[in-house]
Image 1: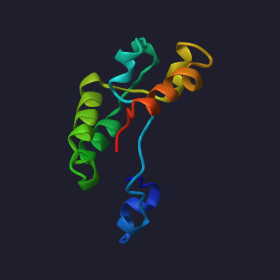
Image 2: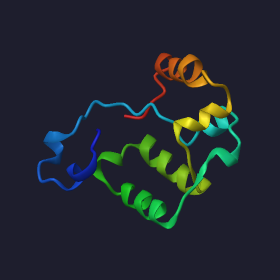
Image 3: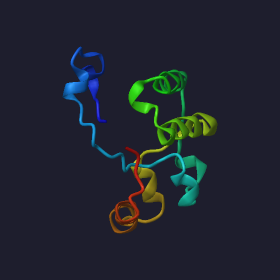
Image 4: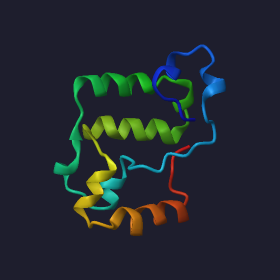
Length: 109
């Protein structure tokens, strides 16, 4: 389910969300899978840690895959953005990463 900005606090947030959305961005397992160096990760700050712990309690993050994802991020102490894949190759994201994610249905929902 995708929720963004003030929708998180909105009374009708369930009606305004997108329940069938898939997250195909970098997962916390991808840095190891793609052998990304730790220096392309972004160190979690206190606000990130607090927010991640809050997310663990949200209804829409109760699926085991999301729980594992958030806990793995907290354990590593790092978050990753898609631009970290530029470390591999200029076209890695569009030629390898996204096609594999889509073919293998490797996403969080």
